[in-house]
Length: 180
Image (tube, rainbow, N blue to C red; front, top):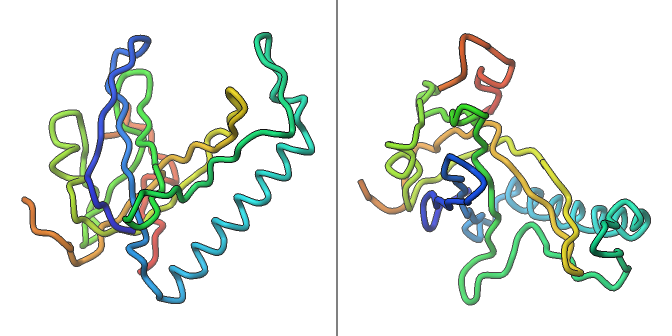
């Protein structure tokens, strides 16, 4: 994947910490892996769409009743004349520590925090990632999904040249699981 813009932050009034996300594209790659990934995302979009239609009552709330005339927001969304983008969240725990694990080109863990995240995840970086669907949402007649980065490993080349875990808990995700 490719970062055309770098990390973005949003401050929400109900949260003490800024929320970070990255918009990434497949850079119109025609490699077999990229084509399979795009096809898999398209298939997954269709599955989510059908599952929501089959289980509309799950999305009813006190203020809204879900209908099958919803508009689905695909994972790879249109971006005018640019390649399609996929938004990935960089989740934080209740103490503000980032839960995603970032690895450099040589497979070393890169600690990220509020002070260095925009320098580490800057415009032009290429990477591989393990992502996880965190939520399927329904709001105001629209349906979509939210994805988070579990692991991210930078590729050896950068397209444009611009220049910690909580306590001592070690999960399986803190060890690099992305193959080259």
